[in-house]
Image (cartoon, rainbow, N blue to C red; front, side):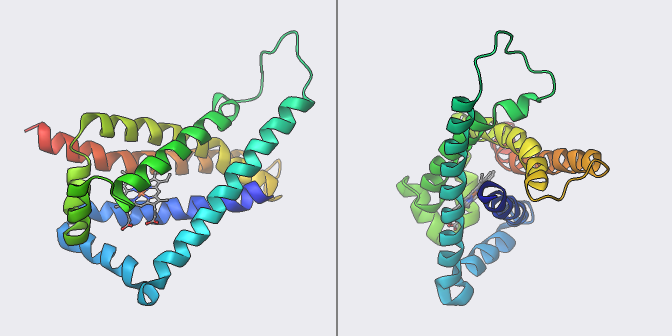
Length: 207
Ligand code: HEM
C-alpha cells in the first residue's frame, strides 16, 4: 500500500514536471515565468512544501520496495528451472530500474536544483531557460538522461498497472485497459522527457 500510494504521488509529479518542462519549447519567457511562479508560490513556501512531500514519498517508496524485494527473495524457493512464463521483463527488473532512477534523481538534483556547476548556478538565477539549454551541452549528460528515461519508462509501464492492482482498482474486465493505459503513460513520459535533451543537443551540434 505504501509503495502504491507514494508511487501515485510520484506518477502525478512526473506528469506535472513534464508539462512544465515542455514550456522550454514555447520559449524563454514562458519557461522563466513558470520557474519564477514555482519559486514564488505561497511566498516561497510552496516549493519547499512540494520538496518535503516529494522527498518523503521517494524515501518511503525506495525503502519499502527494498524491504519487499528482500522479503520476496528470502521467501522464494531456489527453483531448478528459474525461467518465468508470465512475468514481463519490466516487472523482473523493477528493483534495478528503480535504483537507476534513484541515481538519476540524485544526479539531476545536483545538476539543476543545487547546481554544482558554477556556470549553471549563475544561469539558474538569471535565466533558467538558458541553464537547461547549457545543461544539455554535453553528449554524456544527454546519453545518461536518455538511458535513465528509458529505464523510467520500463519502471512505469509495470509500476502504474501494479499500483491499480494494489489499490484494488483492477478487475479481470478492466485489466487489459489498465495494462494499455499504463504502457501509454510510460511512453508519453519517455517521449516527452527525452525530447528535451535530444532536441537541445541536436539543435546545438547538428547545425
Ligand atoms: C529532460 C528532462 C528533465 C528536465 C529538463 C528537468 C528539469 C528540471 C529543472 C530545471 C529542475 C530545477 C527546478 C528548480 O529548482 O528550479 C528540476 C528539478 C527536479 N526534477 Fe527534473 N527535469 C527532467 C526530468 C526529470 C525526471 C525524469 C525526474 C524524475 C524521475 C525529475 C525529477 C526532479 C526532481 C525530484 C527535482 C527537484 C525539485 C526541486 O526540489 O526543485 N526530473 N528538473
